[in-house]
Length: 194
Image (cartoon, rainbow, N blue to C red):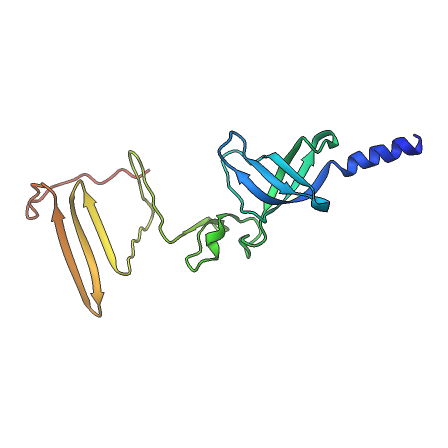
């Protein structure tokens, strides 16, 4: 191989991959498109950002990534990985997996962690679990704890227990057009737990 051909191949290989810094992200397309800054002040626009199926995110400007340029053509880049050292969740044990966002830096720790030993930890300022047809909580032991208020409601008939301080609690019941008589016994079958 002559020297000029060798240098040409070497330049192409060097141009195929680069570190990049995110400037903008557009999440409204079928494939997320980003603008990134590369070495020597170079900017690449409308670069497709590949993500793993079933998990998606919109990183903030300043996140860092790895860009590949197929055939060393800077007009046809793809981002294959992106991370953000400013917000990355730290301190996991080997083998643990987590979902997190920039809000994890707050006191409530906004995250879901699959921990070792079969423990799942979910934290957030508000955690909203909904089941369109059924939401089932089951376990060998089930605990529900509230610091200030616990409320239950079935189709407009409900009860709220409020902690007022010291050794004082207040229980409020409410109904909207309900004809339920609290003194009447209503036998129910225990739920089927799989």
